[in-house]
Image (cartoon, rainbow, N blue to C red):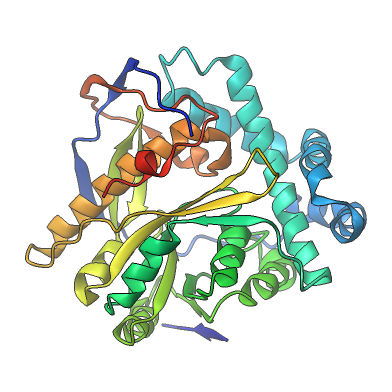
Length: 368
């Protein structure tokens, strides 16, 4: 149902010069509707790729998808601009880190572009074979069950991982958790009017099988969607919200050597309702070709303090956990183009954490 509102390795004992996450800057931003293009080049390339993608999605073993998608990524003329923006973000974030050389950055750019096509294959496989279930391991199932049993409602704050749109929903539903998901009209393959009308419904149709409900927010008048989420949480339900920069109230947080803008709607909703706010990360399992979902420990939300203090503490702690994830799996986070250089950096020596390419243990991601 859709509601639309309107109006296992220990980290090496090394340190590296890096910007400490010791400050969160809260601010407000006006939400203005940018002109939506009628058609973008990616729409055309997606349509031209469909005759090749559909049989692959229907018949080819998923073990071969990454290699096939790397070929599509190299041939994609519209992917060059995306790879350039990814490269800029990665190089800024890991500046001065000798473990992230040019070859590593190239691999990150190529893998992220290939994963865009693999996400499309997952959507098509889900549409063509509704009973398809990829191998997904849910870490933190006990944490999630405990939070649900606590009776205050749960907000799953879904990080912008490469396969969060599909794998997070499939894995949670397979474990018995189908959340009410906050979404936007442009969610899906494209942000053009053509894509929103004809392409994006394909992805939403596949995803909606694993959701209890999709609530589509209107940024110009978000109160209706937020009231719906509050009612769900009041009934001890589960809500999922993506970690995104779009919102009236935002926080700029420090991650590695860059800053990232995060909308503070999820922490604010947790402060108002008393719900548990639990970050979610998704990564690929290198051993069996499946995927891993980490439902992390709840973020600190002290309702005895002000809403602003709660937003600061929650976003600062989230940024700390996200940084650990990025050091472990930099090629599986799709928001590199959105990071910005720090205006004024205060740096200190800090634990480096796992080297890029190595997913941390739960004790590295989740800090009780």
